[in-house]
Length: 479
Image (tube, rainbow, N blue to C red; front, side, top):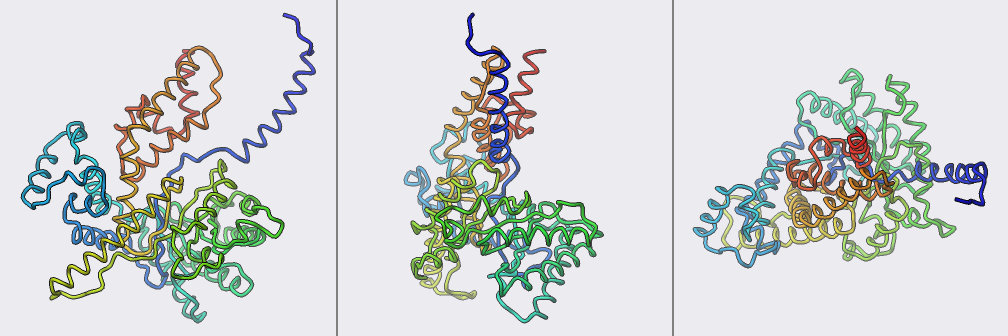
């Protein structure tokens, strides 16, 4: 076959392109297969105790069972699929529940009530097992501006409670601290609080940090604030005998200037780069951001169009970088207006209506976030946790069959390419499909056995990497 290009010219040309391709891949490695929590609970540092997350689970379960004592009630409130076909009489609900309880998972899935039944029971199991996935000990909005002596004392006390939680095994799987921002008036306070907290914690634990520990830096507007945090981390690591690179951080998207700078550019990538690899997530601050857009308090909600604009700008700026993105919080709490043991029927009814309305709002906000590819959000009260999981489980379970078919087809295509020696260049797409199942597995929506319906083995699933799955199949094919 006759060619015009000498091998030397072709090699030089493609080598030059290879350098650019590798540089791009380093910047945009794709979505991380690591576990991402479905939410972060923010709680005032002054209220944090070693068993806070355990107590939140108890409160959340009581809230659910008080205002939705069975799966039919929850399905009706949230209008889950087939809710209109569910029974209304208590005896009929009990009979249906008993019949579903006695079925195998495969039999149950053929029933119209399967989705509502599964969502409710998975919420109950989750609240008993791991109600809080991620917790942030908050020294910013959840704590407020207090005298320096009080914040110093709170930082010491909160650090000791975290150490106690580590010893007792009562912390959430992910945990961290939110300090005050590095604005000109707050920077010294933020540095001091982090120094006190970490120094106290590490002294209490003989130099150990909790698993998945992170520091949240709020109200970031310029790269220099991130750079300052990196230098602070280096000093704290050196002063406390931590390995270089141990401390990680998150940033917040809560001002218009972090979406578009004075030159009309999106500065988010520059801000992430300024963290020198330390920043692992970007969280959206719903209420500060809407306020920065001039939205009045009455209309500051996650459903406002300016929030979607910020979300999409953030996803476009940081897509493929591996930075986890989180939505904000619903500020309507599902708590009835009347308290006490001797409430009238009218007061009980008003409590129920108030809680159900708040449930619906939180459920729709979370569902909207999930549809838009924001797999994490904020919760501010234990009574919000049932709806976090209701929306999350409904999202994953109702999408399961379609996702199985897509990933199974994709795996088969990859297998054919592997066996025939063709180049399969869609590992990033495969990773995205795989990540749906990993996220569902991590939060308890599905089991490993249910992922195997995609054609992947349990060992392949545990690699959490579509590229490694292809690599393994290629080796098996060669062998």
